[in-house]
Amino acid sequence: ELSAGFIDEYLRDMAFLNVTSPDVTPRVSESIDIIVDLIQKIEANGYAYRTSDGVYFSVRKDSHYGCLSGRSVDDMRSGARVEVNEAKEDPLDFALWKLAKPGEIAWESPWGLGRPGWHIECSAMSLKYLGAGFDLHGGGEDLIFPHHENEIAQSEAALGGRKFVRYWMHSGLVNMGGEKMSKSLGNVVSVHELLEQYPGQVIRLYLLQTSYEKPLKFSVTGLGQAFGSYERMVEFESFLNQCAAGGNQKAEERVETLCRTFLSEFEASMENNLNVPRALAAMYEFMTNMRRADKEERLGGAALHAMKVFREALEILGLGQTAEYAMRKMALLDAKDASLRVIAQQMDAASATELSTCGVLDAILEKRRRAREAGDYKVADDIREHLRDIGIVLEDGIDGVRYRLHG
Image 1 (cartoon, rainbow, N blue to C red):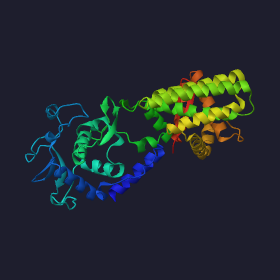
Image 2 (image 1 turned 60 degrees about the vertical axis):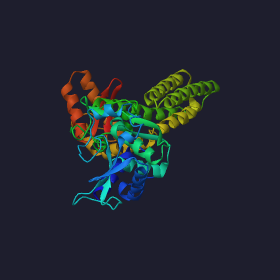
Image 3 (image 1 turned 60 degrees about the horizontal axis):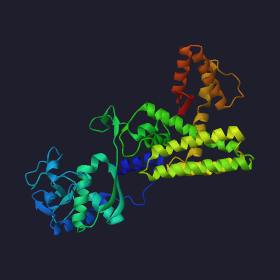
């Protein structure tokens, strides 16, 4: 029941980030039979031995051990995170099955009541559902050794030398204050906490701005910049919609050329080890070129083709919920209508009752802009704080002020 609650929370957060759900989500507690079967194969092939507290994999019997991290067994022993256990034949040997101590959760096995080791569960479940030699295995770079190294060793020992995984993709770590973000250091910001302040699309874009294999230095400033970038994407779609009314052959040819160039650069970037930052740069350049083209010769109906191409690229990046984003933003803003009108009255920003909610907010922001230009920073700061109190956070940037909503 405890784990089910955390699983549900995790899945909700992933849905907000537009992470596609996997077809199969196996659980260790439901996979004990296949884990036991895999350990028996490893043991039968001569790579495992029994001790007083469980079953261990013999690292030195695997001549390929270290192929992923590129280190020799002797190098790994120096400073490696290994468990001190006199029953093991070698400090690098790792547990396949741990016999249970009194009161611990345990399952039946040929070796007695116990539970799987840390590494074996991943091999067993992935081999069952993906088969030997599946294409991609991912994970953080901190799992290269020992976890992934051990996965390869135990899997290929059971498979009689057949390949476990064709390609490994390791992501860089998220750092905060120069250190890896981790629970042990207490420098963790959870996705759930971020979702209370930023839409999922913005958080996703923020993460995509750094290549997956590089470390990411977490910053609130970076999130604010990602927020502005996603707002521009949403505005660009709106701009294309407004353009799509009539057109001419010359505009269609120019738009076709711009779209073809953009798609070529976008696809080449994605095919080059998922170089998403470069793909995003091509997208921003495309947005700029399309606006320039409209100023020079009016896009008209040709904008619909650009819209199709732009949306396809957004979908590939998992950023395609622009319409939902805009609708949710308007719904949140409408819910703050009464509070906004009170602030407008207090700050003498707008008194016309016929103004829409957006109009009232625009009037308040205009009042703040004029106060800043006049050097009256107290009024400007007061407006910022009043808006923050009702869940409207202002983001000042080089292209003006934007607002994000929460609550």
